[in-house]
Length: 239
Image (cartoon, rainbow, N blue to C red):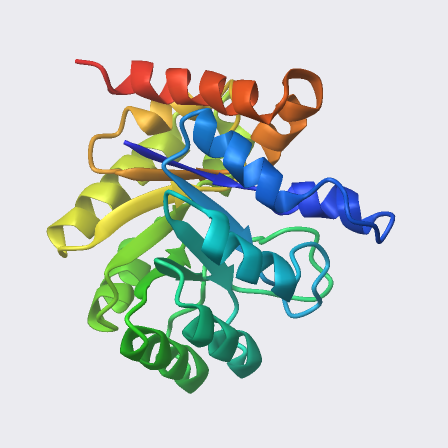
């Protein structure tokens, strides 16, 4: 299973003082040394953490692959088209939210989303859609011709201590997506405590984890924080 590390909140700390540290590029390099298979950043319209210059620098510096999360805003899609990250993950985005609160609403697949997919694909970028673990959403994503979906694990992250219902829903959704020939990713709210049951789901091939790793990196350093998450994921995948 691939582990992609989201380093947005390294930039969140930097932007708290509008200074030049901590540097997301250095964080990405440390994450790669710790075993990350890819680096994820979200270039938001409001630029609350990652900045355009960060994405440009990371596009050059990252030695694994760069996964750029973005809304379907034309300006951001144009930036992605110029920089050509390995993967672009389209996510819903609202100015007032603290973090992404759910999957894309694909009912009727808005023209903006269709246009974003077409432009990113034309630029040679692999496209993934961040969606809820719902068969209907998966079917709509497949109909849009994307390569992958990322299943929103927020419900699981909120309820895993009380019930396995959300985990079973993820398992069913992942199998359904694989049956539609989609690559299956997952992320949101995954931590060192709850990651292993999700990592053990064989139809999921990639995890995106950020906040928990960056939080641990404050005490352990980024390289060691990623190494420990890497170990947990690998343990969960062993026969």
